[in-house]
Amino acid sequence: MDATVMKNLRGKIAMVTGASAGIGAAIVTKLLENGAIVVGFARNLEKMEETKRNLPVGFHPIKVDVTKEDEIRRAFGWIKENLGTLHILVNNAGCMAIGKLMDGDPEVWRGDPADAGKTGVEDGLIINMNSTAGHHVPYYVNPRLNMYPASKFALTAVNETLRQELRYAGSTIRVTSISPGYVDTGFALRARDAEKVEDEIKVILGAQPSLTAEDVAESVMHVVSLPRHVQVDEIVLTAV
Image (tube, rainbow, N blue to C red; front, side, top):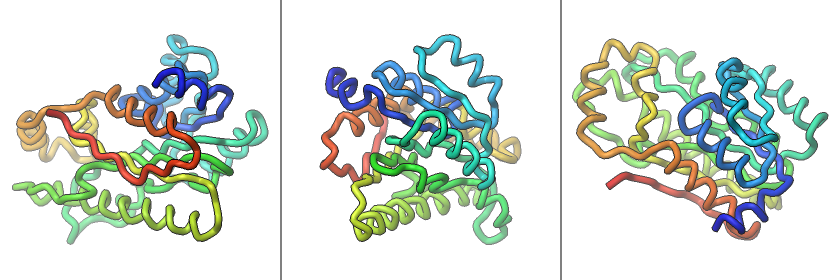
């Protein structure tokens, strides 16, 4: 598959949100290793700059908070002016807010970007990072964890709606949703207010096998290796 990936990626412009750590950083590395030029969006520019020193050439980190539309538009403007047409967009950035659906803060919900910058791809591939929690609701003893699957089910609907809209418009842009199970990146423990349910989170996560960030990045490479006429709707990943 590597030769096919390199052929498909050579000279292509890719953008990855949440590029400073975890799954995002692993995806950036794989794309660069296979010949793509990669723009990374994250709030932690210093961490991306530090990572850049150990990466192949072609990485352009930009400080962007993807919950702020003006920052997104400005960053996409920079890409178009300095690099040209964007071919691959990986919406990986997200947050896990602790809260119940009935009493949650809508401003917090809006902080989990489902489709940030989707109009920035002119002809190519959009990959939205979802979760297995977007397909079935896990049972949480503590209802303060319930907001996460609710937001991921919404993302599942956004993916399919966007795919249908693009098809109706006659666009050749493909949309893929990748839904991993538990990935050992520390993401859940960095959630807003996670300290309130930290013990329960550790019990839940400790009871199941985990994927690595590199596992998820490999699934992205599989999607980009396919011919342009192949639409992958959904990939679900779990560890055994």
